[in-house]
Length: 226
Image (cartoon, rainbow, N blue to C red; front, side, top):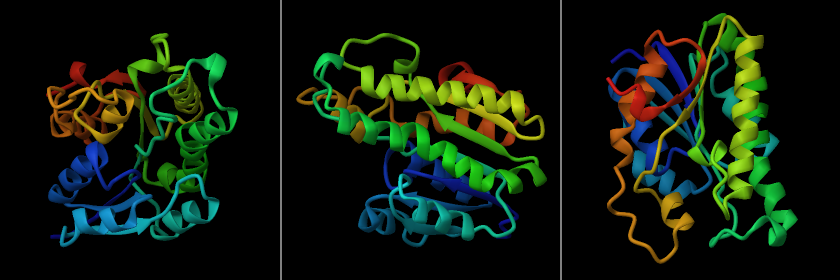
């Protein structure tokens, strides 16, 4: 199978990132897949045609440079999916460890923009797409979600401004909704999250953003499912 479209997907070893990487590969995309857990990344994507795995931390500038170097001709799609929840259980802002908050912002807000900056010249040339994975916690003031929620809110605003500044690139924020993922389990320790929808149910919405004709903007996945 020829792979004439190239995507970078961060946080691809589990959950939504893994489901999307597999779906893109099956549709003929070449996917550069990133995750912090290198062993799991290799294990879950071993043998998937068209997928290049590069383990590392998106908060590390050297790792981001390596991701960009893996696509010297540019990419058609960047999916900023890698996220850090912060402490579990999540503390109120009055008690939030500031070093942990800096880490959440480094992964959830700064790293996506830094990767966008590296890949933007190629995205412009190829009239590509950026999908920044958001959360309902970015718009709803849930008690205990001040760290993760505010980091995602900042990412939403960066996404919206970038869309206004880059008319040749479609720029999306997407709230996938609750899913049965490791991050959801971290957010609700001790609870059974198996009743949440699987990440695979959200993939068709992301594929519509990646391959369809929706204008730049913020979308809730359930609202744009085919």
